[in-house]
Amino acid sequence: MVYITSWDDFAERSIQLFRADPESTRYVMKYRHCDGKLVLKVTDNRECLKFKSDQAQDAKKMEKLNNIFFTLMARGPEVDTSEVAGKEQMEQPAKKGRGRKQ
Image (cartoon, rainbow, N blue to C red; front, side, top):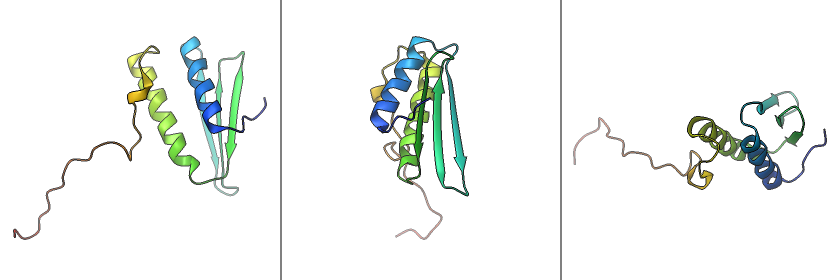
C-alpha cells in the first residue's frame, strides 16, 4: 500500500477502480483531528489506492470525490462524471427574507 502523492492521479485511478468492479470496491475516509490528517483509501481487495493530506484545501477535493462516488453508486458506473459538481458550483435558490419590503 503506497500512498499516491498526486490528487488528480488518485481521483482518476479511484474512479477507474470503481468502474471496473463496483460490487466489491470500498471507499474509506479517516480523519485524525489531533494530527490534522485526512487519509482516503479505495480498494477492491486486489488493488489498494491511498492518499494522505494535512492541507485544509483538500477537504473540498474530497467532497467533490464523494459526490462523484455517490453519483456512480446511484446512477451506475457508466454515467458521465463531468456533470457532477461540488457544493460551491451548485446554483443556490434565491433566499426570501423576512425583512422590510423596499
